[in-house]
Length: 278
Image (tube, rainbow, N blue to C red):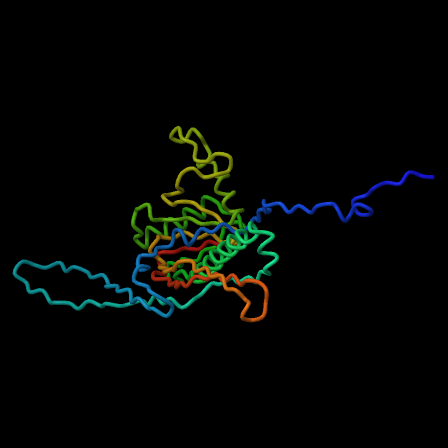
């Protein structure tokens, strides 16, 4: 008689324990960049959905070359307002059975993490969609010189536009690219050459220093578009993350509902303080 084998899937199936790891597989998603660097100066004035903050602006004026003894005419000045409205909600909801909740507490924590990350990505997508650079001369929407490869010539062209628009020479300037364009920057000789001022601009493919005064970030959410902007070009108001867990017993269900949401508003304020290369 042939040997008989005790197998996991056969005779021993009833006594083999099932072990669920508490370590969930990491998912690679878009890097969330924009919510951290877009200005949020008026966020403290927002209380709830539907609130509106009117952001005032006063136009520039020109001085007169006044001759000795001559009379100078008074001029008017134009004040305008831009409305920042908190009119959006990003939400993620889950329904979890009582058994699933009891058997896997780490799973509940993973749901909260996945949900909050998804909300941030949604806010970033809306910020990117709201970008609308000036199309009047000089046009702030420019094309790559070569396909979708970001070259030094492209950066210098945008840098000239910044100078024409009188962008402040401050550290509140940013360069956000797609991942492939970030690699293009790292491959520009003047940035990775360690002999330049004796300091390496690039190490292991990561930019260590600002590029033409711009802090550099990247995200696949940008696609193949490169964004160069001064921080005040856009304003956002983002509320706190609301998390609620509701017992579904009243509905005759054995389980819980996990609701997560954030209220927010986004408004581009200046179209001449942002440039896209694409």
